[in-house]
Length: 210
Image 1 (tube, rainbow, N blue to C red):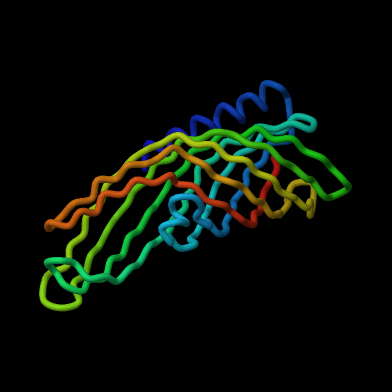
Image 2: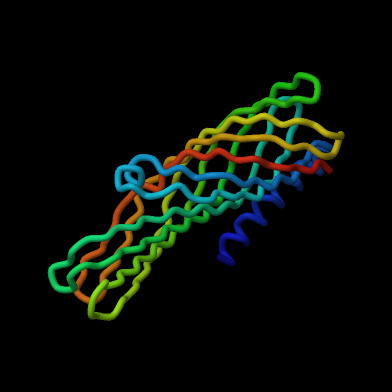
């Protein structure tokens, strides 16, 4: 987690220093939160909708902008089945992802409304955990593993300027990544899992300009 924060701070420093050198005033900090809806492999395997949050710093020059961000999203999977040696069990899986992203944006203004769209790339730090609970005799166990993959995204949104320095808005994005590989083995149960960390995101946000 410390590595993620460091990468984000370095990216934000680059954005803000570039803005300072250019003499630009349109620099903003945004806090976003919403819903992550799994797609692709995760959707096929019935992973549930989860939380998506993000902290982003944006430098804008005229109708173009660049945004550095660090985020977090999570999804869960639950299943009941009969295991050959443990009998009836309940499995609870959790996937947590920390994306560090860089986006390139285009803007269109109409009064207090700012429309924007764009896309970018990112590195996704992921952690998967499996917990299996026998319903009868036997001890529960858990295991976890981590992996990191590259990905990309496309996004579009709308901001409303309440004042010159404060705004709120909504945003949607599509997230696509390479396949993450998790090795999860314990107590004789094979639980390896490979999946792209794909999903669709809808979120609300507030922002402050400096």
